[in-house]
Amino acid sequence: MTATLLSVNVGMPKDVSWQGRTVHTGVWKRPVAGPRMARRLNIDGDGQGDLQGHGGEQRAVLVYQIQSYAHWQEHFGRDDFTYGQFGENFTVDGLPDDEVCIGDRYRIGEAEFEVTQPRVTCYRVGMRLGEPELPALLVAHHRPGFYLRVLTEGEVRAGDAIVKTRTGPQAFTVASIDALLYLPGRDPDDLRRALAIPALSPGWRQSFLDLAARSEPPTEPHAKPPAEAWPGFRPLRVTAVVRETPSVLSLHLQAPAGAALPAAEAGQYLTFRIAAAGDPPPVRSYSLSSAPGAAGYRVSVKREEHGLVSRYLHSHLRPGAVLETAAPRGDFVLAPRTGPVILASAGVGVTPVMAMLHRLAAEPPAGPTEGPLWWIHVARSRAEHLFAREAHTLLASLPDAREHIYYTDPGMSGPGMSGPGMSGPGEAGPGGGHPVGGGAGRPPEVHRGRPTLESLAALGLPADATPADATAYLCGPAAFMTALRAMLTRLGLPPERIRTELFGAREAITPGLTARPAVAPHQPPGEPGTGPLITFARSGLAVAWSPRHRSLLDLADACDVPTRWSCRTGVCHTCATPLLSGDVDYAPDPLEPPPAGQALICCSRPRHDVVLDL
Image (cartoon, rainbow, N blue to C red):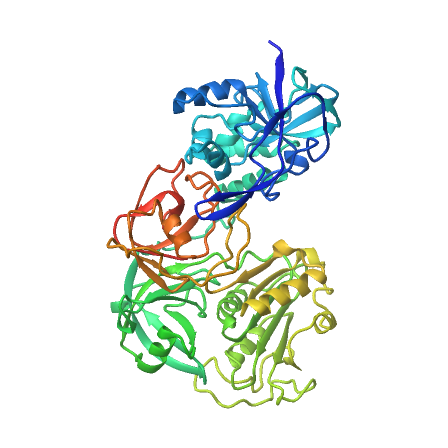
């Protein structure tokens, strides 16, 4: 039976009120009469509100089948659907998702199209139908619909026959490739088959590459599996408190009775619940600065004038104290080295990159093709230069390390004041103090002021190597990382090879929501809840749960806690959040459970007190 184009539907983006926010969306489509031009990026008269998830060359035309209309009308007990109801451009008779394959080509009217990917799971189709769970149901019922790219531009109209002109390689149907991404039990061979389809869109290709990388066995034949981290919080004993600089101290931690601690990855952090500092107990996270694999952990804490926890730790903590501690976690970790490395930090932001430097110094010497290591650190003065001696000693052990220090205090002397013979204020800590000599490496070069594009270019950064092969790790204040990222990008580093760590709330992902002034996290409006205590660790906020919130995500939204989400129904895992302690229940159940130690906050509620890394 020949498939037929029943309706051509278009619509321009508009602002729609939704849950107290405004969504800019093009999901409202209406049928049009007569011919319409199908162009490379769109049907004439059509548009998308969120070009990150919709539209563009690979997603120029969305297709949905009238047979799926009938399925959903029966499922929801409705009879009010009209063409364009599911946000599609083409409503078709035929072309079922379990028969159409990625890479199939079709001629419709004067135009020719190629199938590139299934529909993206997005909350807006549920908003359009008034059925919030629809994004999850589209996947679970294997009826997502699919996108086309326009190979040959031309006019199309309702009533046109749809003629298949080529079958895609691998015979991978839309429904099967949708399930491969979103449902559990995926076969690594299927991932390889999917990646062999040239027509597969770049976004889906990258998702499958990521999944394939996770399924690969360790490359080192004798690699030991990492020690299992502990759930929730456990007591760790403070074995030493070391004053590193006037404003920073380090806490050395070990398990009681000398029990072994799992090794942390270089760049991870610990989260503490400090019962003695307040009620409810405040929760804070601090980067590990110790060598990965060391017998104990070390975190370094800067005293903040208005910081409740940092002031308590600086004023009251003594060796022998016990701190409730969550296991090491975090995604800002040192990847296997394949080229030059840039470790750049400012102030106490040196802590995670110090752990990375320890890791690099412990590895076999880098080969000649891996290129140099640049160490760039910004401090106010020598007195505030954290881990100066320790970093210099490690850098001196590496064959091609370049150490550059920037002092921002205008009272410091200028260029030419470098050298390991400079003496510092004589801090007591083993990592403190400016280097005073020794080591086989070149001496540090010390600069006045902050890094600039010109000063970084003068360092040969990264002109001494192919910029695309270099990887940069940045940690420090947000303004420092924003400026340095922009400069490194101008010097040729691809943005995806510049990795950053920002304490405090992560950047939000809220597709389609219109921008509004930032608001500090706060208690939700209305009557206080009486349920379990929900602690948003990064935001420094604790809130009693109320059943008026449909999910932990809804509570976070009500508190203006920055969040990341897309489908809001447990499909896409964009909202996956480290669960530092506690347990949650799901409604609806996610199609694929999150990794251990994480929660999908878009469809979960607390079973009892929980601490979330938000």
